[in-house]
Image (cartoon, rainbow, N blue to C red; front, side, top):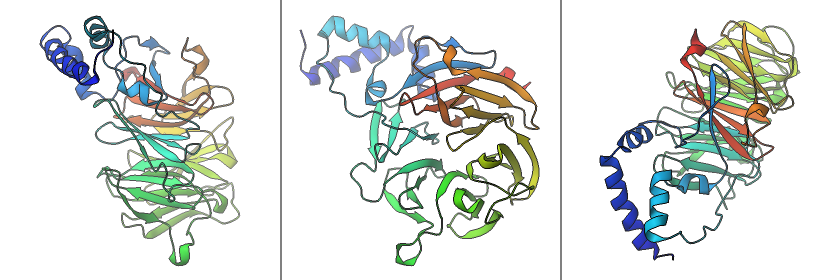
Length: 352
């Protein structure tokens, strides 16, 4: 028999207090200090990459710890059926902030989903707003401001940590945009520099923290020489270097933070859906949504291993695209085909 929601809420608070003082206290501490959602079954994917879970909707955030949820059912009876609130429709990119909130760009929903697993909260940024049309890429700066690349307006929208709109990057007088079509974006939290891939111009644009253009890498018309691009689509800053997915030339180019060429890593395949991420050791993760794989390279380009997403049993996770690494050990991967995001733990062995 179901009970009033307010009564159920009071019961959950009392039970949580009991659980924290008992054997489950260790779980509570871990959950409060780690970015990963609670998950009891962690499946080993490779020696260096462990599958944790997938998530796709508000329901995945609001679920309680399994022990607490089951105890509530016994004492208060099953909860009333939960109405499905919001779910990913066509996710393209993922990132996190310092509070481990997970942001997912969803051009299909014309919004950015905000998953706060630690506080069991879910919200939507931009739903119903005329500003946000086609969000395709994300970045967070050192103050937890969120930068959203919007394909429709060809600009970058800035929101503060509370979700309040603060302004644009790339908007010119008269409503025109500085960018032809911005794609990937990243922010160097040490310097505040912002790097934006402008794919049709075959360039990476470098801006300061105030949005002023301070440099450009590449040339109009594109090229395949050092520091030249064809349709650059993803960019990541890590360890004082800038990693650019040069999709049209099927390679990754590594630059210094001023945009000077250092080296390149050739790839077997890349397109606009290919994702790019770099961990704290400089290992490079490249997704292949066609072959359902994530390939990992060392910083200098040596191949480490290939992870096949189809080996995850029962997860319905297959076509990895956009990626992000939080805290050096939590890899978030977008699967735009199944409208899910997968979470993986990176082993310390990966750095050896």
